[in-house]
Length: 156
Image 1: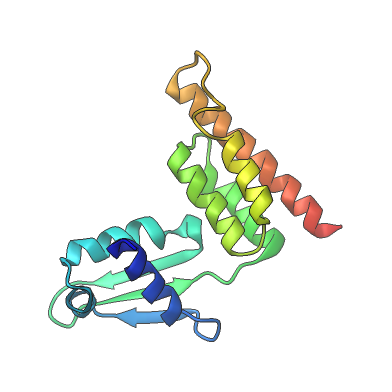
Image 2 (image 1 turned 60 degrees about the horizontal axis):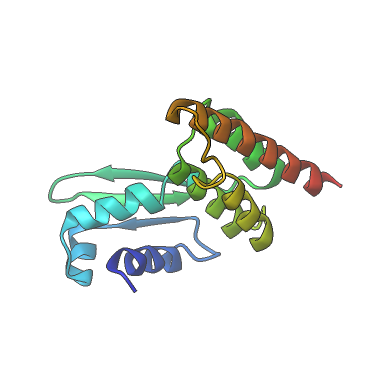
């Protein structure tokens, strides 16, 4: 297991079902895992972003801390947030995969649904003679449609 995966798992365990918020010291966490504080920053930026359902707040300095809050929105409200505020008009493949993973991890999409969504939005599926900008716009519109279909499924 890579160190990034270990750090992510450690933080998620601290954020168990009972606690939607955790406060950590960046340097202590880096020391615990034997890595540079920048590695902690990387994990926070890539694994605990708003698109994955987390808000992070940090204060630097001697008494500095990192606070991670799991956003508790679920179901149609969370899906509406993703469509309205998170996806926008353009979406990279990497960001689409993060959103899909969040949908799967939060139970808003099954594993099979997430796999199909990822395949449909992959670089292979969009390997047509279009500019990257048009592909990213198409990816955003397609993911929005998929999320709306999931929301309709949940309401039935």
